[in-house]
Length: 411
Image (cartoon, rainbow, N blue to C red; front, side, top):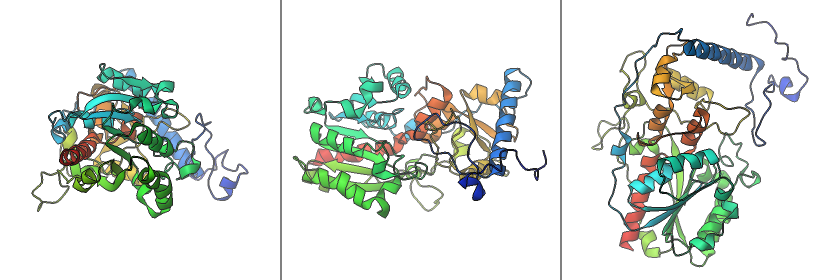
Protein backbone atom coordinates (compact mmCIF):
# COMPACT_ATOMS: atom_id res chain seq x y z
CA UNK A 1 0.00 0.00 0.00
CA UNK A 2 1.37 3.40 -0.95
CA UNK A 3 1.85 5.83 1.91
CA UNK A 4 -0.30 8.29 -0.08
CA UNK A 5 -3.12 5.85 -0.77
CA UNK A 6 -6.33 6.76 1.12
CA UNK A 7 -7.60 4.25 3.64
CA UNK A 8 -11.07 2.78 3.16
CA UNK A 9 -12.15 3.87 6.62
CA UNK A 10 -10.42 7.24 6.58
CA UNK A 11 -13.40 9.18 5.23
CA UNK A 12 -15.91 8.15 7.89
CA UNK A 13 -18.22 11.05 8.58
CA UNK A 14 -17.37 11.74 12.20
CA UNK A 15 -16.36 14.80 14.15
CA UNK A 16 -12.96 13.22 14.62
CA UNK A 17 -12.43 12.88 10.90
CA UNK A 18 -13.16 16.58 10.42
CA UNK A 19 -10.22 17.28 12.73
CA UNK A 20 -7.97 14.87 10.83
CA UNK A 21 -8.53 12.15 13.43
CA UNK A 22 -10.33 8.84 13.14
CA UNK A 23 -11.91 6.59 15.79
CA UNK A 24 -10.49 3.24 16.74
CA UNK A 25 -12.02 0.23 15.01
CA UNK A 26 -11.33 -1.96 18.03
CA UNK A 27 -14.43 -2.18 20.26
CA UNK A 28 -13.72 -1.16 23.82
CA UNK A 29 -14.25 -3.79 26.50
CA UNK A 30 -13.97 -1.38 29.42
CA UNK A 31 -16.66 1.24 30.19
CA UNK A 32 -14.07 3.81 31.26
CA UNK A 33 -11.67 3.32 28.37
CA UNK A 34 -11.00 6.45 26.33
CA UNK A 35 -9.23 5.61 23.05
CA UNK A 36 -6.26 7.68 21.94
CA UNK A 37 -6.91 10.38 19.37
CA UNK A 38 -4.95 9.36 16.26
CA UNK A 39 -4.92 10.21 12.60
CA UNK A 40 -5.64 7.60 9.95
CA UNK A 41 -1.96 7.42 9.06
CA UNK A 42 -0.98 6.89 12.71
CA UNK A 43 -3.56 4.14 13.14
CA UNK A 44 -2.34 2.45 9.97
CA UNK A 45 1.23 2.57 11.26
CA UNK A 46 0.21 0.93 14.53
CA UNK A 47 -1.83 -1.66 12.64
CA UNK A 48 1.17 -2.63 10.55
CA UNK A 49 3.35 -2.75 13.64
CA UNK A 50 0.88 -5.18 15.23
CA UNK A 51 0.87 -7.32 12.10
CA UNK A 52 4.67 -7.51 12.09
CA UNK A 53 4.68 -8.36 15.78
CA UNK A 54 2.19 -11.20 15.29
CA UNK A 55 4.26 -12.58 12.43
CA UNK A 56 7.44 -12.38 14.52
CA UNK A 57 5.62 -14.13 17.36
CA UNK A 58 4.52 -16.92 15.03
CA UNK A 59 8.01 -17.38 13.66
CA UNK A 60 9.54 -17.34 17.14
CA UNK A 61 7.10 -20.03 18.32
CA UNK A 62 8.02 -22.12 15.26
CA UNK A 63 11.74 -21.80 16.04
CA UNK A 64 12.41 -19.92 12.80
CA UNK A 65 14.26 -16.98 14.39
CA UNK A 66 17.75 -16.65 15.81
CA UNK A 67 18.13 -14.87 19.13
CA UNK A 68 19.48 -11.35 18.85
CA UNK A 69 20.67 -11.18 22.44
CA UNK A 70 21.70 -13.51 25.21
CA UNK A 71 19.57 -13.87 28.31
CA UNK A 72 20.54 -10.86 30.40
CA UNK A 73 21.83 -11.04 33.96
CA UNK A 74 20.89 -7.82 35.81
CA UNK A 75 23.56 -5.73 37.50
CA UNK A 76 21.11 -4.09 39.90
CA UNK A 77 19.70 -6.00 42.85
CA UNK A 78 16.84 -3.78 44.00
CA UNK A 79 16.96 -5.30 47.49
CA UNK A 80 20.11 -3.24 48.03
CA UNK A 81 17.97 -0.11 47.56
CA UNK A 82 15.73 -1.05 50.49
CA UNK A 83 17.67 -2.98 53.16
CA UNK A 84 15.50 -5.06 55.44
CA UNK A 85 15.12 -3.16 58.73
CA UNK A 86 14.58 -4.55 62.21
CA UNK A 87 10.92 -5.05 63.22
CA UNK A 88 9.46 -1.78 64.50
CA UNK A 89 6.47 -3.31 66.27
CA UNK A 90 4.15 -1.30 64.00
CA UNK A 91 1.29 -3.04 62.18
CA UNK A 92 0.40 -2.02 58.61
CA UNK A 93 -2.86 -2.41 56.70
CA UNK A 94 -2.80 -2.11 52.90
CA UNK A 95 -5.56 -0.71 50.66
CA UNK A 96 -5.52 -0.79 46.85
CA UNK A 97 -2.62 -3.21 47.20
CA UNK A 98 -2.25 -4.06 43.51
CA UNK A 99 0.86 -6.10 42.82
CA UNK A 100 2.31 -5.20 46.21
CA UNK A 101 4.56 -2.16 45.76
CA UNK A 102 3.79 -0.55 49.13
CA UNK A 103 3.25 -3.93 50.80
CA UNK A 104 6.80 -4.99 49.90
CA UNK A 105 8.16 -1.59 50.93
CA UNK A 106 6.58 -1.55 54.38
CA UNK A 107 7.49 -5.18 55.00
CA UNK A 108 11.17 -4.50 54.26
CA UNK A 109 11.01 -1.36 56.42
CA UNK A 110 10.17 -3.51 59.45
CA UNK A 111 6.39 -3.22 59.72
CA UNK A 112 4.17 -6.22 60.34
CA UNK A 113 1.70 -6.87 57.54
CA UNK A 114 -1.86 -7.12 58.85
CA UNK A 115 -3.96 -7.47 55.68
CA UNK A 116 -4.31 -6.37 52.05
CA UNK A 117 -7.44 -5.25 50.21
CA UNK A 118 -7.36 -5.42 46.40
CA UNK A 119 -10.37 -5.53 44.08
CA UNK A 120 -8.56 -7.15 41.13
CA UNK A 121 -8.50 -10.92 41.57
CA UNK A 122 -5.30 -11.39 39.58
CA UNK A 123 -3.45 -8.80 41.68
CA UNK A 124 -4.69 -10.43 44.88
CA UNK A 125 -3.40 -13.74 43.48
CA UNK A 126 0.05 -12.19 43.07
CA UNK A 127 0.05 -11.13 46.72
CA UNK A 128 -1.15 -14.52 47.97
CA UNK A 129 1.35 -16.40 45.83
CA UNK A 130 4.29 -14.37 47.10
CA UNK A 131 3.18 -14.26 50.74
CA UNK A 132 0.92 -17.24 51.51
CA UNK A 133 0.93 -16.27 55.18
CA UNK A 134 -0.62 -12.85 54.49
CA UNK A 135 -4.31 -12.11 54.89
CA UNK A 136 -5.36 -11.03 51.41
CA UNK A 137 -8.88 -9.90 50.50
CA UNK A 138 -9.41 -10.01 46.74
CA UNK A 139 -12.23 -9.41 44.28
CA UNK A 140 -15.51 -8.36 45.86
CA UNK A 141 -14.02 -8.91 49.32
CA UNK A 142 -11.24 -6.50 48.41
CA UNK A 143 -13.57 -3.67 47.42
CA UNK A 144 -12.88 -0.87 49.92
CA UNK A 145 -16.46 0.38 49.67
CA UNK A 146 -17.92 -2.68 51.36
CA UNK A 147 -15.63 -3.09 54.38
CA UNK A 148 -16.60 -2.41 57.98
CA UNK A 149 -13.38 -0.56 58.78
CA UNK A 150 -14.29 0.01 62.41
CA UNK A 151 -13.54 -3.69 62.98
CA UNK A 152 -9.84 -2.90 62.38
CA UNK A 153 -9.70 -0.18 65.02
CA UNK A 154 -6.98 -0.90 67.58
CA UNK A 155 -5.38 -3.52 65.30
CA UNK A 156 -3.63 -1.18 62.85
CA UNK A 157 -0.89 1.39 63.44
CA UNK A 158 -0.24 2.51 59.87
CA UNK A 159 -2.68 2.44 56.95
CA UNK A 160 -1.17 2.73 53.49
CA UNK A 161 -2.36 2.60 49.91
CA UNK A 162 -2.59 4.28 46.54
CA UNK A 163 -6.16 5.13 45.49
CA UNK A 164 -6.69 4.74 41.72
CA UNK A 165 -4.80 7.49 39.92
CA UNK A 166 -6.81 7.59 36.67
CA UNK A 167 -9.15 10.37 37.89
CA UNK A 168 -6.12 12.68 38.17
CA UNK A 169 -3.74 11.44 35.47
CA UNK A 170 -3.42 12.76 31.93
CA UNK A 171 -4.11 9.28 30.60
CA UNK A 172 -7.37 9.20 32.58
CA UNK A 173 -8.42 12.64 31.27
CA UNK A 174 -8.26 14.17 34.77
CA UNK A 175 -11.97 14.01 35.53
CA UNK A 176 -11.38 14.09 39.31
CA UNK A 177 -14.51 13.54 41.38
CA UNK A 178 -16.53 12.94 38.20
CA UNK A 179 -14.61 9.73 37.54
CA UNK A 180 -16.30 6.76 39.27
CA UNK A 181 -12.84 5.36 40.06
CA UNK A 182 -12.19 8.21 42.50
CA UNK A 183 -11.61 6.41 45.80
CA UNK A 184 -10.21 9.21 47.93
CA UNK A 185 -13.53 9.69 49.80
CA UNK A 186 -13.49 5.95 50.63
CA UNK A 187 -9.87 6.24 51.75
CA UNK A 188 -10.64 9.13 54.10
CA UNK A 189 -13.62 7.17 55.44
CA UNK A 190 -11.37 4.19 56.19
CA UNK A 191 -8.80 6.38 57.97
CA UNK A 192 -11.47 8.00 60.15
CA UNK A 193 -13.01 4.64 61.02
CA UNK A 194 -9.77 2.75 61.78
CA UNK A 195 -8.00 5.71 63.44
CA UNK A 196 -4.41 4.53 62.78
CA UNK A 197 -1.58 6.50 64.34
CA UNK A 198 -0.38 7.32 60.81
CA UNK A 199 -1.36 6.87 57.19
CA UNK A 200 0.42 7.01 53.84
CA UNK A 201 -1.53 7.59 50.61
CA UNK A 202 0.12 8.18 47.23
CA UNK A 203 -0.95 9.23 43.75
CA UNK A 204 0.19 10.90 40.54
CA UNK A 205 1.87 14.29 40.99
CA UNK A 206 -0.98 16.02 39.12
CA UNK A 207 -2.99 15.69 42.31
CA UNK A 208 -0.59 18.24 43.84
CA UNK A 209 -1.25 20.76 41.04
CA UNK A 210 -3.36 23.89 41.31
CA UNK A 211 -6.03 22.20 39.18
CA UNK A 212 -6.88 19.87 42.06
CA UNK A 213 -6.06 22.19 44.97
CA UNK A 214 -9.71 22.65 45.91
CA UNK A 215 -10.37 18.92 45.59
CA UNK A 216 -7.42 18.09 47.88
CA UNK A 217 -8.55 20.64 50.43
CA UNK A 218 -12.24 19.67 50.46
CA UNK A 219 -11.96 15.89 50.04
CA UNK A 220 -8.67 14.97 51.75
CA UNK A 221 -7.11 17.46 54.14
CA UNK A 222 -10.06 19.32 55.67
CA UNK A 223 -12.11 16.19 56.51
CA UNK A 224 -9.05 14.69 58.22
CA UNK A 225 -8.20 17.89 60.05
CA UNK A 226 -11.81 18.07 61.34
CA UNK A 227 -12.04 14.41 62.29
CA UNK A 228 -11.84 13.04 65.82
CA UNK A 229 -9.05 12.28 66.31
CA UNK A 230 -7.55 14.97 64.14
CA UNK A 231 -4.87 14.21 61.56
CA UNK A 232 -1.97 16.51 60.68
CA UNK A 233 -1.03 15.98 57.04
CA UNK A 234 2.21 16.42 55.12
CA UNK A 235 2.35 16.36 51.34
CA UNK A 236 5.60 15.56 49.53
CA UNK A 237 6.49 14.93 45.89
CA UNK A 238 9.18 12.31 45.36
CA UNK A 239 11.10 11.00 42.36
CA UNK A 240 11.92 7.33 41.94
CA UNK A 241 15.41 8.06 40.63
CA UNK A 242 16.30 9.70 43.97
CA UNK A 243 16.02 6.25 45.54
CA UNK A 244 18.02 4.28 42.97
CA UNK A 245 15.14 3.27 40.70
CA UNK A 246 16.26 3.55 37.03
CA UNK A 247 13.07 5.19 35.83
CA UNK A 248 11.56 8.65 35.40
CA UNK A 249 8.64 8.56 37.81
CA UNK A 250 7.19 11.10 40.25
CA UNK A 251 4.61 10.50 42.94
CA UNK A 252 2.81 12.72 45.43
CA UNK A 253 2.53 11.24 48.90
CA UNK A 254 0.20 12.32 51.69
CA UNK A 255 1.50 11.38 55.14
CA UNK A 256 -0.79 11.96 58.10
CA UNK A 257 -0.22 11.64 61.85
CA UNK A 258 -2.61 11.64 64.79
CA UNK A 259 0.13 13.11 66.95
CA UNK A 260 1.27 16.69 66.40
CA UNK A 261 4.62 15.70 67.87
CA UNK A 262 5.05 12.96 65.26
CA UNK A 263 3.94 15.38 62.55
CA UNK A 264 6.60 17.88 63.66
CA UNK A 265 9.24 15.14 63.89
CA UNK A 266 8.59 13.85 60.39
CA UNK A 267 11.23 14.59 57.77
CA UNK A 268 10.55 13.95 54.10
CA UNK A 269 12.67 11.06 52.84
CA UNK A 270 16.12 12.25 51.84
CA UNK A 271 17.47 10.94 48.53
CA UNK A 272 19.58 7.81 48.86
CA UNK A 273 20.95 8.05 45.30
CA UNK A 274 21.82 10.72 42.76
CA UNK A 275 21.21 10.64 39.03
CA UNK A 276 23.86 12.05 36.69
CA UNK A 277 25.50 14.19 39.37
CA UNK A 278 29.22 13.43 39.73
CA UNK A 279 29.56 16.05 42.47
CA UNK A 280 27.16 14.24 44.79
CA UNK A 281 28.43 12.07 47.64
CA UNK A 282 25.47 9.73 47.14
CA UNK A 283 25.85 6.53 45.14
CA UNK A 284 24.72 7.01 41.53
CA UNK A 285 21.42 5.73 40.23
CA UNK A 286 22.14 3.24 37.48
CA UNK A 287 20.97 3.81 33.95
CA UNK A 288 18.39 1.28 32.86
CA UNK A 289 20.74 -0.55 30.49
CA UNK A 290 23.36 -0.94 33.21
CA UNK A 291 20.68 -2.05 35.68
CA UNK A 292 19.44 -4.73 33.27
CA UNK A 293 22.97 -5.96 32.61
CA UNK A 294 23.04 -4.83 28.98
CA UNK A 295 26.24 -3.81 27.18
CA UNK A 296 27.16 -0.15 27.12
CA UNK A 297 27.42 0.79 23.45
CA UNK A 298 27.69 4.11 21.63
CA UNK A 299 24.61 3.29 19.58
CA UNK A 300 22.41 3.33 22.70
CA UNK A 301 23.51 5.89 25.31
CA UNK A 302 22.31 4.83 28.74
CA UNK A 303 19.72 6.75 30.70
CA UNK A 304 16.61 6.42 32.81
CA UNK A 305 13.65 4.46 31.50
CA UNK A 306 10.49 6.46 30.77
CA UNK A 307 7.61 6.04 33.18
CA UNK A 308 6.32 2.47 32.95
CA UNK A 309 2.71 2.45 31.80
CA UNK A 310 -0.05 0.22 33.10
CA UNK A 311 -2.46 -1.01 30.44
CA UNK A 312 -5.13 -2.70 32.54
CA UNK A 313 -7.86 -0.30 31.38
CA UNK A 314 -8.40 -0.53 27.65
CA UNK A 315 -10.17 -2.20 24.73
CA UNK A 316 -7.87 -5.20 24.62
CA UNK A 317 -5.17 -6.99 26.52
CA UNK A 318 -1.83 -5.26 25.99
CA UNK A 319 1.71 -6.09 26.94
CA UNK A 320 2.97 -2.62 26.05
CA UNK A 321 4.43 -0.40 28.75
CA UNK A 322 4.80 2.67 26.52
CA UNK A 323 2.54 5.59 27.42
CA UNK A 324 3.21 8.23 24.75
CA UNK A 325 4.95 9.08 21.50
CA UNK A 326 7.73 10.87 23.37
CA UNK A 327 8.19 7.83 25.61
CA UNK A 328 8.44 5.62 22.52
CA UNK A 329 11.30 7.78 21.26
CA UNK A 330 13.05 7.52 24.63
CA UNK A 331 12.70 3.74 24.68
CA UNK A 332 14.11 3.60 21.14
CA UNK A 333 17.06 5.79 22.09
CA UNK A 334 17.84 3.34 24.90
CA UNK A 335 17.62 0.39 22.51
CA UNK A 336 14.73 -1.13 24.44
CA UNK A 337 11.45 -2.44 23.02
CA UNK A 338 8.42 -1.57 25.21
CA UNK A 339 5.59 -2.74 22.94
CA UNK A 340 5.58 -6.47 23.56
CA UNK A 341 6.88 -7.64 26.94
CA UNK A 342 7.72 -11.35 27.09
CA UNK A 343 6.81 -13.68 29.95
CA UNK A 344 10.42 -14.61 30.79
CA UNK A 345 13.94 -13.51 29.88
CA UNK A 346 14.37 -16.75 27.97
CA UNK A 347 11.22 -16.07 25.96
CA UNK A 348 12.39 -12.50 25.26
CA UNK A 349 15.67 -13.80 23.91
CA UNK A 350 13.87 -16.28 21.64
CA UNK A 351 11.55 -13.57 20.28
CA UNK A 352 13.79 -10.88 18.74
CA UNK A 353 12.33 -7.58 17.64
CA UNK A 354 12.42 -6.61 14.00
CA UNK A 355 14.23 -3.38 14.93
CA UNK A 356 16.99 -5.15 16.82
CA UNK A 357 16.04 -3.44 20.10
CA UNK A 358 16.22 -5.45 23.32
CA UNK A 359 12.91 -7.10 24.16
CA UNK A 360 11.96 -6.71 27.81
CA UNK A 361 10.58 -9.48 30.00
CA UNK A 362 8.20 -9.26 32.96
CA UNK A 363 11.20 -9.64 35.29
CA UNK A 364 12.94 -6.74 33.54
CA UNK A 365 9.90 -4.46 33.88
CA UNK A 366 9.62 -5.41 37.57
CA UNK A 367 13.29 -4.50 38.05
CA UNK A 368 12.79 -1.14 36.32
CA UNK A 369 9.96 -0.47 38.79
CA UNK A 370 12.12 -1.49 41.76
CA UNK A 371 10.57 -4.82 42.78
CA UNK A 372 12.88 -7.38 44.39
CA UNK A 373 13.99 -10.18 42.05
CA UNK A 374 12.34 -12.77 44.29
CA UNK A 375 8.86 -11.30 43.70
CA UNK A 376 7.04 -13.49 41.19
CA UNK A 377 4.20 -12.71 38.81
CA UNK A 378 1.97 -15.79 38.42
CA UNK A 379 -0.59 -14.17 36.12
CA UNK A 380 -0.89 -13.43 32.39
CA UNK A 381 1.75 -11.08 31.00
CA UNK A 382 -0.68 -8.21 30.42
CA UNK A 383 -1.91 -8.55 34.01
CA UNK A 384 1.63 -8.69 35.39
CA UNK A 385 2.87 -5.59 33.56
CA UNK A 386 -0.39 -3.83 34.46
CA UNK A 387 0.18 -4.55 38.13
CA UNK A 388 3.80 -3.43 37.90
CA UNK A 389 2.93 -0.20 36.10
CA UNK A 390 0.27 0.63 38.70
CA UNK A 391 2.61 0.03 41.64
CA UNK A 392 4.59 2.41 43.80
CA UNK A 393 8.30 1.71 43.24
CA UNK A 394 9.12 -0.27 46.39
CA UNK A 395 12.41 1.58 47.15
CA UNK A 396 10.50 4.89 47.13
CA UNK A 397 7.82 3.38 49.37
CA UNK A 398 10.51 1.95 51.67
CA UNK A 399 12.02 5.42 52.14
CA UNK A 400 8.60 6.81 53.09
CA UNK A 401 7.92 3.92 55.49
CA UNK A 402 11.32 4.47 57.13
CA UNK A 403 10.65 8.19 57.63
CA UNK A 404 7.20 7.47 59.11
CA UNK A 405 8.65 4.89 61.49
CA UNK A 406 11.35 7.30 62.63
CA UNK A 407 8.81 10.06 63.25
CA UNK A 408 6.57 7.77 65.30
CA UNK A 409 9.56 6.64 67.35
CA UNK A 410 10.19 10.25 68.36
CA UNK A 411 6.58 11.02 69.26
